[in-house]
Structures are given as structure tokens and as C-alpha cells.
Length: 87
Image (cartoon, rainbow, N blue to C red; front, side, top):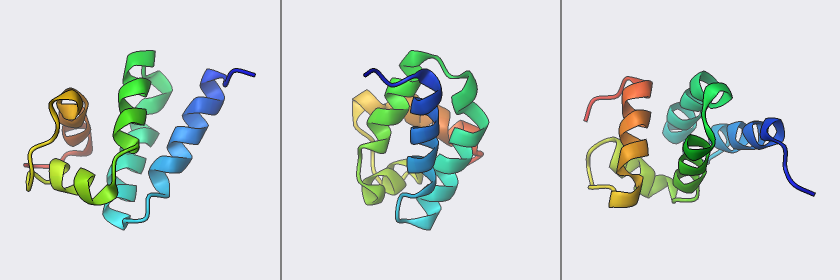
């Protein structure tokens, strides 16, 4: 059975708030709460791809301590802007 959009958003929101590193919970969970409901399928796909990465790597990328992979940069730029973070 295919997952509905509503279930997918709920699943992504839950995963965003239960990462393991509190900083990433706040960044990803906060972004999810503000943006997932209105996100198009491409944005949901990008968010899900970023969520598959390790917290340590994600934190390094969003904090500007390391350069993100090219494939994730467009979404990470949106994430950083949407979270009000400075790099």
C-alpha cells in the first residue's frame, strides 16, 4: 500500500524531531513544522534525502564547518534560511 501525503508528512516530522542530536532536532523539526505542510513533492524528496544523512554531517553542513555535497546544497540553503541560521 502506498503512503499518503499526510502520513508521509507526519512520518518526516516525527523523524525530524527525534534525530538524536538536540541541535538537529531543533533545526530539522522546526523547519518541518513551518514548511512541510505546504511543501511540494520535490521538497519532500529533498528533505527526506537530507534526513537520511548522519546528524554529525548535517550539523557540520548547516553550521558551515564543512561543505555539503552538491546534491544537498539547494535544500540545505533553504533549511538554513528557513531556520534563521548564519553560516
